[in-house]
Image (cartoon, rainbow over all chains, first blue to last red; front, side, top):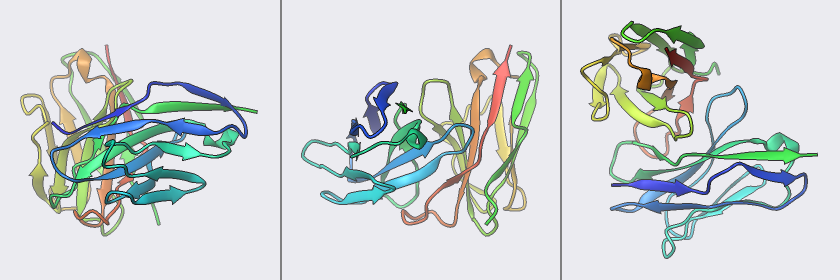
Length: 113
Length: 115
């Protein structure tokens, strides 16, 4: 079945460090890919998305490129801040008409000053 | 705009008891979703409504879970009787439509503990 695999956390970084959170997917069709973020005490929020191969999604300094050849959608940020501490979820939707998000297990990011 | 509202925020019950969760989506959003998020796992779709009709309930344990959206606006999710493995955060989300360019907006969730 369709699935998303994320690197396990927590990922612990110092402020201004470079961030990579790995995400790979398995899908029968051609999915759209998403990163959602969950800040402490808040609901899930869409961070960025990419709908076709080689698309790059970006938002708030975060980027992810849809790599069809490696079935990956790794999240990157050049310089993290303490306020980026949250749980990050990679997710996919198959382009079949209605939205059924399939989520990864989430990766907790902890950024220290 | 006001976000997706859920209540209660927390609930503790004993196994075999029943519980209900409530969700009020963003005004004008036709599509409503209930997700279950077990600790350490990603959210899993339980049921999706389009207005007051069910689009997908393939992963809803129908022997104990039920959900309704009678007037196509707010929704309730019920568990009866609850089991220990139902301990999770129950997330409600809504979107304007079903298509890919209609992002989901999530509520803060209801954390259920079954003892």
